[in-house]
Length: 221
Picture 1 (tube, rainbow, N blue to C red):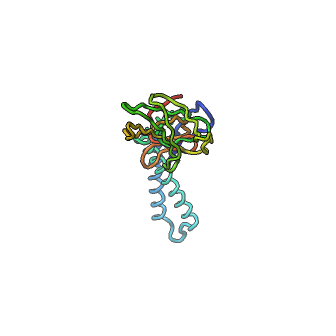
Picture 2: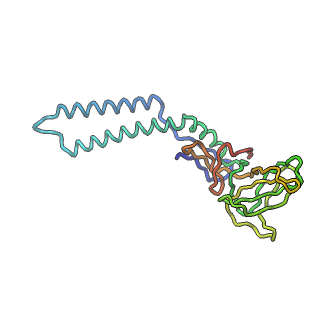
Picture 3: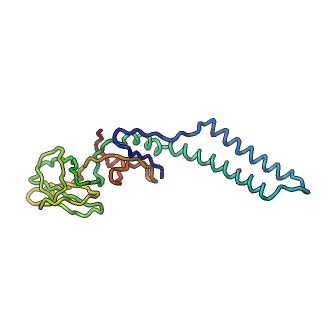
């Protein structure tokens, strides 16, 4: 897994590793082939009465293996960062230090979180449902019928704060006691890094949460 992470604070910048140019890679590959030919020729033409020492042969083989591995590593890294996933990785690295609105679980440090609530036509009541990291329902709160950003305090009915942790949210809209719709609610959180997993690039969020681009509905400083 390849990752880009910045933990120094706001307004960070990130950079990708410097890759060898195409010329440099071609030279490395050429040196690799030349080395192989020289080693093969040396073995074929060594003096039968004074053959190459085993230790010397082992050293040359180790050198040969190191050159091969370096060439393969450079090629693999180039493919990784120039492929579709790598391009997305570089683009998303610009999001580090900014806030995104996501329906994925976000970190609650016992300070208010900003949620985006969207109204539902014909609804008579709306309930905000809070889920823990495992997706278990832990809190239900009646909210207004309007739309807009609200500050979620993370408090139970008795005023007790929920413990710090990862939480996600959804809204249930009802009419005449019947549920009209259930929608995920986006919450704002900070991006602390980007990683490239087997299924593509993912954002690393404050507190260790992760989100795909599909989970993001807004971006702000």
